[in-house]
Every structure is written in structure tokens, then in C-alpha cells.
Amino acid sequence: MVETKCLNLTTMNDAIVQNGRKTQKRFPWIYVPTTYFAEGVPYVIVNTVSVIIYKKMGIPNSLIGLTSLLYLPWVIKMLWGPLVDTHSTKRQWIISTQFAMAIGFGIAALCMQSAAFFTFSLVLFTAIAFASATHDIATDGFYMLALSKEDQALYVGVRNTFYRVAMIFASGGLVVLAGILERRTGNIPMSWTVALAVAGAIFLVLALFHRFYLPRPATDRGIHPEREEEKAPWLAVFRSYFKQPKIVPVVAFILLYRLGESMLVKMAQPFLIDPPGSGGLGLATETVGFVYGTIGVLCLLAGGILGGYLISRFGFRRCVWPMVIALNAPDLVYVYLAWARPSISYVYLLVAVEQFGYGLGFTAFMVFLMYRAKEPYKTSHYAISTGIMALGMMLPGMVSGFIQEALGYLNFFILVCFLTIPGMLTIFFIPKEEN
Image 1 (cartoon, helix red, strand yellow):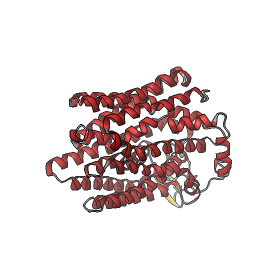
Image 2: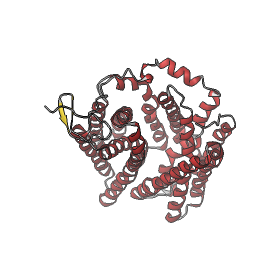
Image 3: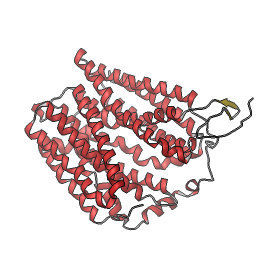
Image 4: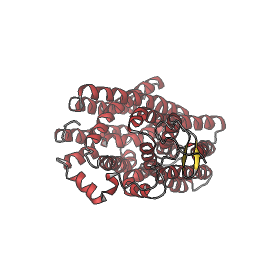
């Protein structure tokens, strides 16, 4: 047994002894990217890639819209956050949920061959969603325990980058893979079986890797009474949040800011896939993966980076209106696409513009949510705000398919543009002080 000479949870430069075992140094630049990659992949598969799967497998848009219910675990995850904090360790929660998601994706892959694939896959995606939401809680908590405040700031760019890499991998790489297999074999169920099996295999590798590589922070003991937020009763946290000044317009803004976008995002990919006879553009699966999951995500990232710079340079108050216009005005792109049906080169360009504007406008929204998080419950307040945000995405998305089928794509996208107005009107009433 080696005596611990130095317990430095940030750099872990020396071998340390924790829980009776010798632990070699663990490098954050290895496990921070892998844990946040694991955080992003299931969210994108469950909420975005599933739309493409169901569209290619012949599910109508009305039922595809109802899959917005899969957002629910991310809406309510704050309710079982204390369970993750007080039972077992964050490290064990991370590993266990990754194994669970590996099994879930593996079974979902097999279900693609079943006549009842829609029911089976919905059940499995729901289970994966709850595991993923729990994994999010544990990963964010582990990040704060394993790293010092200085290194938390240092690696925040790394964690965000690899979350976005996960988005490109899931909505781009896996979809392109399925599209290539579909084109070569003509077997759509088999193509998605392979894509989901790849996701399951990756999570199995990640779970095994993290089982042996994740550090064991001494403070990751399952309960941390010294942390003020964990001592606060839930009711006190919620009461302090909803007693904020102008809370009614604040909640209205959070719910309505992305109203148009929440309708659009659920039907955008079915529109790209549907044949011209049904009002769509008739793009191949791999093309959709490249247009929306690769070029689109890269432009989303670029918009987010520019938005962060502009707010840091000019402040939220001066940026909110230009950014909300940048978010909503590009929705007109889909009106044009549905009306003119341009060539594929224009589709690439216009989707890139729409996603860039979305990234720019979404930055202002996230900064506003951070400003609404007040001491001493900043983390809990932010979780409440993001839960309300997810609710604002879930409810409109559930009815989007029914509305699209009733109106057709062109009129649906025109309606989406009008639905951006309520969120913009709430800006006149929200507090705009900056932290």
C-alpha cells in the first residue's frame, strides 16, 4: 500500500490512494472529452436521429411529432437530481448509465427488424432518455468534483466542443452511415440496425474505458452536506426561483422564445426526406445527414461562437433584439424551400444560413437563463430554467406533425414564421440586467 503524499484532484500529478487502492494519475484532457461525448450522443439520437429513422421506416408525421414526449426526461431530471447526489458516487452513476445505454441501443438495433419496431423502439428510446438524463446529472456533478474551479474554467471549452462533436457524430456520421447502407443494399431496417448497433458498441467501449480510467475524487462519496445547495429543501429552491421579479414574463419568454423553432425542428428533416409528391424535397438519407447533421451543426457552432463573442463585447441588452431576429428570420428559408424547391446546392446554403442564425439567437437565450440563476441556488435555478425550456420544446413539437399534415409543408412553415412573434413580444417585459 502506498501512502498518499498529495491529494490534488485537479492535476493528479502523483499516484494517490483512494478507497484502499492505488490510482495512477488521470488526465482531464482524456476523460472530459469522452464523458461529454457520451452526454451528447444519446440526446441527439433520441430527439433528432429518431425522427429520421421513423420517417424512413414509414411512420406518419403526426406520430413523429408525438415523439417530442421523449424530451420529458430532460424536462423533469431536476426531480431526481438529489437521488444522484446522495446515493452511490457520480463515477458509478456515469459507468452504470453508460452500460444501460449500450444495452438499450443494442436491443433497439435488433428491434428495427420487427414488425412492431415503432412500439419497441419508443419504449427503448424512453429508457435511454431517462438513462441519458441521469448521466447528464452525474457527469456535470463529477466534472465539478474531479476538477478545481480553475480547471473547470480551463476545460469548459473542451467539454462543449466534444458535446458538439457528439452532435456531428450522431446526426451526421450515423445518419450518413445508414444512408450509404440503404443505398447499397436497399434494406432500410438493416441500415438502421447497423447504425444503432454502432452506437451501442461505442457506449460499451466508453463504459469499459471509464470503468478503468475515470479518477476517484475523494469528495465523490455520495453525499456532500457541506454544499449549501444540497441542504436546501426542494420547495425552498422552487420558491426562491418563482419569487424573482417579473417571473411571469420570464417564464413566458422561456416557453415562447423558441415556439416557432420547436415546431420547425421536428418537421424539418421529414420535409427534406419526403418525396416531392408529398411536398418534400426528396433528399437521400445520407444527404440529409450531411446537410443537417454535418454542415448544419458546424454552422450552428459558428453562430454560437459569434454570439458568445458579441454578448461579451456589447452586452445582453444590446444584443437580444438582433439575435432574436437572427434566430427567427431564417425560418423563412423553409418557406422558400417548400415553395421554390431549389437545387441541392441552394439547400446546402439555405440550411447553413438557418442553422447559423439559430446558433446566434440561441446564445442570447442561454445567457438569459444564466442571468436568471440567483444565489444561493444558482445551479438549481439554472436546472429549473432548462427544464422549462425543454417543456417549451416538447409541447409544440407534439402537435407539429398533426398541424403539418393538416396544412401541408408550405403553409406549415408560414405558420411557423407567425409563431415566432409571441416570443419576440415577451422581450419588452423581461428584466434585462446583466450579471
